[in-house]
Structures are given as structure tokens and as C-alpha cells.
Length: 530
Ligand SMILES: *[C@@H]1O[C@H](CO)[C@@H](O)[C@H](O)[C@H]1NC(C)=O
Ligand SMILES: *[C@@H]1O[C@H](CO)[C@@H](O)[C@H](O)[C@H]1NC(C)=O
Ligand SMILES: *[C@@H]1O[C@H](CO)[C@@H](O)[C@H](O)[C@H]1NC(C)=O
Ligand SMILES: CC(=O)N[C@H]1CO[C@H](CO)[C@@H](O)[C@@H]1O
Image 1 (cartoon, rainbow, N blue to C red):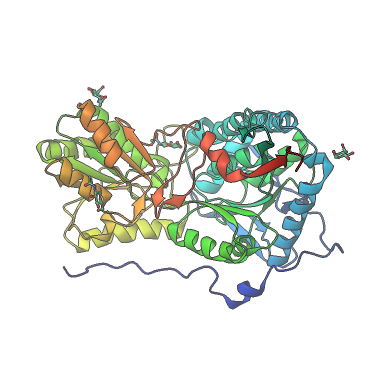
Image 2 (cartoon, rainbow, N blue to C red; image 1 turned 135 degrees about the vertical axis):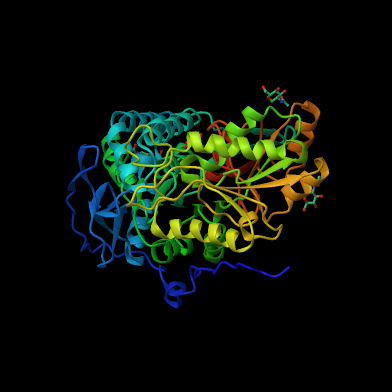
């Protein structure tokens, strides 16, 4: 099979030689950092707010030490929104030492779980009280529809904080019976300073998934935001201070991945690193974190299969399959982007899926409440999706683009369905991260499973069938961290979220999500008198 298409690989993190040497010491206390005032912004929906643009360290917005800035763009208009301070390695040192001090400080260390829960709930209430502003910022910076920002992203942040607040006074150790001459028990203790690196596809929600379990267990945090979406969580900094968190417990920095992200991942003052993003960058984080053998959790890429058997309810399958790959502009790590459809219903499924997409995927202004699909987050992401589409054309695939015309400005792409691709085509194996579905036919259950599992990823999978036994058989055999029967993209904060294979390490959400944020200490007391 000749290759008609090959993706070029962007540079790795950590290849820059200066990184290997950075971040050894801590920042000196001599402070040259000055406060930064917020700027006034107004969004296309006419809402105005004061946007912080500094680094949020020790409950203050301060200047970055270097001249580095990140300029962020509204992807629907291609207009610059503003610039924010970008952390240098020294700024990361400062944030880490603020977090280390807070970890030891009685104002945090002496709190009971009940006290921490109260702070977390207060923050959740403030997030809800500022929901419209936060949703506006998210939509302007990321491009996702305002209805989704307001209906999903903001409430996800507040819900996850409340959910983990509920665990804060229930995370206990155990006593273990070792006989009359020994008292043995375990206690749970915070891991320490947690470096958390979040992606641009769900900035508020991903921050919640990281902050919730970490705060619950008494850790302190340096949260690094994504370069493409620096604004919404910076705004939350003010709410963190207002909620009453002691200085240094939650620090929020913007910065470039290969500078600030890398500095955090290799920092000797950081005890744990949690990362959500691409598989490639996840490997860089792992490599850098290995220097001090940090605890890690990674939530990385996916190419999740959705299997439709002949006996499925096709209306149901089409509707969930559409949401599973077209929702959030297809910028979802769990996107069920590989649709595998059994021979008997293949033609009908393709036809109905194309029709459903034409009807549902309304592309346009993300502040318009009729819009289902806003722009891709950036020009680079748009180019990536278009590259896969033109590669599919070049290899003789069929391209279905059922929606009407696109807005003349902004990083918009047609929702796209690719069929008749050769089995080795990259569009069937690489994560496209756009509203771009591939559909492949299969003969029987064995073939479906072997195609579904033939991936380096193992994040999610979905199956549609009327046969209960088959549904559970397939759920068991799919190589994935999450399986949906008769649905897709149907996560719940009370259920663990994460992948196997190259889709990640560890789990977020659910009770399981706490595991990465405490250490268990074993204490054994000799009662024997010997
Ligand atoms: C914090 O706890 C320590 C040890 O239990 C105690 O000595 C100290 O006074 C407490 N500090 C505050 C501010 O409560
Ligand atoms: C998929 O789920 C995410 C979060 O769970 C949500 O933001 C998105 O809108 C969903 N997409 C659809 C089409 O339901
Ligand atoms: C999936 O849902 C359809 C439609 O409600 C139903 O007919 C089918 O039995 C369900 N499958 C399983 C395994 O529950
Ligand atoms: C049941 C089944 O087919 N499982 C397969 C999943 O894919 C892996 C890797 O391709 C195979 O080793 C399994 O046999």
C-alpha cells in the first residue's frame, strides 16, 4: 500500500537544551514582580467585564518577569482580543514556591476536610454567580457556542467542585488488624504541590476536573492554562480570592508549553503532574517528570470507535453518533470519530447520518443561539482538519459535506463525513480533532472488535445493538477506558474518566479521581513491650 498522505510531526517539548538546566532552585524572595491591572473587554454579545491579564500567584495578579506575552484571538472573527502575561521558567519557580509555602502554612495545612469543603462550595457558588460572564469569555476565546459554554462548561466547573467538596470529609485511612501486639493504621495525606496542565477545548471544565480532587485532598496547585484559551480561568482567580482560599493554594499561570509547561513538568518543587492534551505532549511531560519521579496522571488522545450492529435502533444510533463526533466542533478527546457499521445497515446509516448532519450541524456565529458548531479554536486546528479532508480526497475517499456555506471570516470548517477510505488511511487512525467522522463497514462481531481495537489509543468506545448479551460482550472486549452502550459522549462526573494504551494513565472524576491526589501512609505501633 503506497502512502498518499503523511502528517508532519511538530517539534517535541524539552528538546530545547536550556530546559534541561532550568528550574532547579526556587525563586529568591527579593520581589521585582509588580501588580498588573485588569483591562476592560466587551464581547460581541455586548457583555463587558474586567479581564485580568497577569499571572495569578499568591492571590495577586502580577507581571511576568520576562517580556513574553500570549496574544489571544477570537476564532469566530479572527480579531485579537488581548495579550496576557506568559510565565518564564523563573515565574514558574515563583508560582511553585508560593504553592510550597501554602502547603506548609497553617491557614491551609490546619484545615479539616470540612473547612476545605466550605471553601470549595463557596468557589462553586461564585462561579455560578458569574456564569454569564464566564460563558461569554469562554465563547469569545474558544469559539464554542455560548449555549454550550453556559449550559455545560460553567456548570461542569461548579458541579465538579461541589462533588469533590462532598468527599473532603470522607477520605479516610483504615485500621488493619495485625493481632494484639500491634496497632496498625493508614492515613491519607496530600501528595503536595500539583502541577496541572489543561487543554483549550474545555478550559473551565478541565480546570474543574483538576482542581476539585486536588483541593479535596489538601494539595496546593500551579495550574497552567492553554496558550489558545488563557482568559476564562484567569477571571476565576478573582473568585478564588473572594472565596477565601489562602494565598498560594491555587496559582494560575499562562505560558508556552515548551517553556512554562516543561518547567512545571520537570520542577523539583512539584510533587505531582497532571496533564490533559495530546499523546505526543503527554509523552514529553512523562519524560520531564521522570527526573524527580513525580506522580503523574495523563489524559491524552483518542480515536474512539462507535459500533453499530444490524439490529440497532438506527435513529438512536445516528443521533448519538452525530453528537459524539460533531459536538464541541469535534474538539473532544473522547470523540467517537471512527464509526463502524455492519453491512446490513451500512448504506442506510450513511445516508441518514449525512441527512442528520445537514439538519443539525448549523455552523455559524457562536453567540447565535441557533448555532450548533462554532469555529475551530485556531487557524492551525482548522488547517489540520482540512489537511485530513484533502488527504481523503487524494486517496480516493468519498467526502460528504452536507451543510450550507460557511461564514466568510473565522476558522470555520464544514462538518465532514469520510467514507470509502483505504484501511491504512491516516484519517482512520490519527486523531483529527475536528467535526470529521469516518465510516467503515464490517461483517460480524469479530471483525468489528478487531478493527475497533486496532489502535494505539484506548480512550472510549460505543456500541449500538438490541442484543443485551452482545452489548456486554463488546463492552468487555473493547480496549478502552470507557464504554457507552446505546449512547456516546455521555460522561458523568460521578464516573471515572480516562483511557488505556496511549490514551493515558490514571483516572479523573468519580471517587477514582481522588486516587491520584493523596498518598497513603502506613503507621505501625509496637504494643508488645519488647
Ligand atoms: C496549626 O496546627 C499546629 C499543630 O497542630 C499548631 O501548633 C498551630 O498552632 C496551628 N496553627 C493555627 C494557626 O491554627
Ligand atoms: C459532548 O459532551 C460534552 C461534554 O460532556 C459537551 O460539551 C458537548 O456539547 C457534547 N456534545 C454533544 C453533541 O452532546
Ligand atoms: C438500545 O436502545 C434501543 C432503543 O431504545 C433498544 O431497542 C435496545 O434494546 C437497547 N439495547 C440494549 C442492549 O439495551
Ligand atoms: C475480541 C478481540 O477481537 N480483541 C482484539 C482487540 O484488538 C487486539 C489488538 O488488535 C487483539 O489482540 C484482540 O484480540
